[in-house]
Length: 413
Image (tube, rainbow, N blue to C red; front, side, top):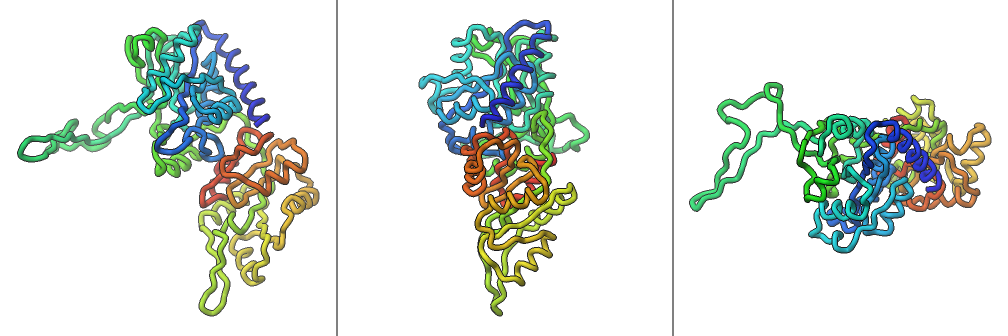
């Protein structure tokens, strides 16, 4: 993560310069709470989401907003601390007293405030809101610096018809909370309701010391529904991944120009199994969205070549090649050697080459490691992405079933 740290340091430097240009001299700090003992999804805060550790999305947004003097992650876990620092955040190592299952977010925020007396305004950013954008933080902080608000929090407009449970000795009934059943409004005929989406809460130090995140002169900041994403349990993850690939903030850096994608056939496009029909014909299963992903990549000028270590029937290989409109190279045991041969033939650099293997997609953007490290990264792909030291912070490790489709959205977002 050396390159990730370098980019993060540049963001911190730029953020400090921009903050000094404002008239408000108060120290405004971003604080991201990331406890290691997540019950719903173990170590959820650093689980890879569309190629980025979950907390990486909000750390990047906070740093690139340029409105904070400092960006912090509060944690009790060594690995979360390591990832947070790699992405450019400072770390508040919280005490055991505020790290229990019964501890509230406010308990941790108050501890942070007490240990950092120089901080005047705290913005609690939710780690599980990966679609947060710097522009929203920029606009929201102006409510503090220009309008004199004591607290600002993010909301999203919803249009639910809400009912409440009513219990009595005879029966269990219900009654409406926000509508007249005899005159049910159409969506376009009412303004809906403002609901906290949890993305961020700005509060002055004085409010926090009183045990409040909302109080004094308050104001809400309305975020777009597509940016209001929260992850709590496992089933939220695939939905959040699709949303972040479409609406997430991918940083200010322009994506590298990928010209060649080498895709491992078994495990990359197929489930690694060969099916035998009643008449002895060999068959494999391919997701049609992967085919769509390859088509989109090719339209962007990306050359796609399929690799296969194990020999397969020529008839099956020909069918796959025709179906995917890609060249298939069989009996490829040494993938590194084959990639280097193709790069030399096509005059490509590592930053222009991508590899999609059994566990996901690995971009070789700005890779400055010896060949041994390149070989390790190519052959021994890991789901968590932890071992890929030296890669740019936009490295994409995708573990979805339709890998080329998501790979396209990451590269050409």
